[in-house]
Length: 120
Image (tube, rainbow, N blue to C red; front, side, top):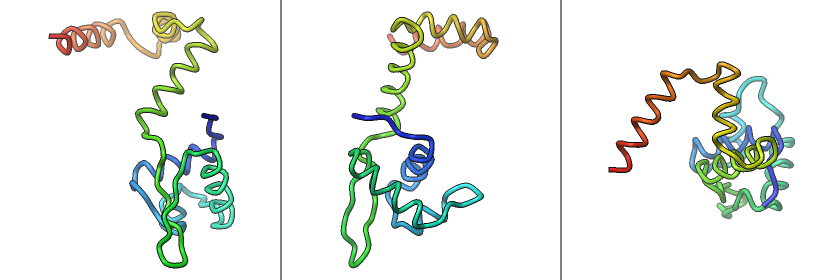
């Protein structure tokens, strides 16, 4: 499966939030400044071709549905970041986040407690 561009990701976030939507529902839920409906329609067509979005005929319109869940896309994206920039090592990702002060030692300790709790 290919990756999403920034514009496609923005539309995907709307679709994940809505669950599904007609073109104008998607446009109306986009952040300001809202893109033109023709632009969104063109991007949606590309996303259908890339198999990120499925369509359903509703009269003369299409209802768009995500073909991949937010969780699955997030997992795949994070795995690709780890592979591409951190030799595939998630500990290296975490170490980088600590070094960059994006996550504190206290937050790491809380995560470790949560992991231990979930294993029981």
